[in-house]
Image (cartoon, rainbow, N blue to C red; front, side, top):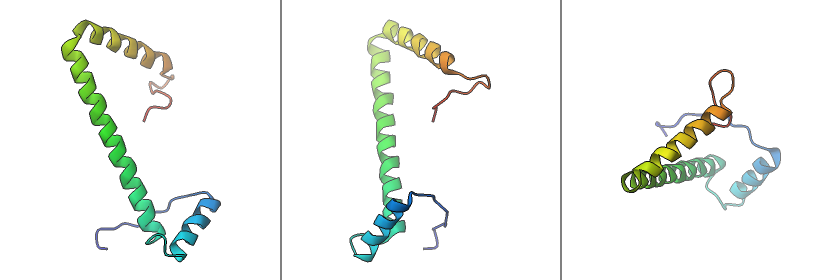
Length: 93
C-alpha cells in the first residue's frame, strides 16, 4: 500500500450505503477497491475510444483529404460557435 494516496470523494448517500453493504456482505473486497477498479475501467474505455477515433480520423484523412478539410472546417466553426467570452468551450473535457 506504499503506492496509494488517500483522497476524499463525494458520492450520493444511497450509493455509499449500497457500496458499504456490498463490502460488509463480502460481495466486494472494499469500497476503495471497487471505486479504484471503476475508475481504472472508465479510464481504459476512454483511452480505447480515443485511439479508435484517432485511427478513424487518420484513415479518413488518408482516403478523403478534401472531405477531411471540410470536416475540419465544420468542427472549427462549431468549436467557435460554442466558445464563451473567456475563450473556453462549455462542456469541453
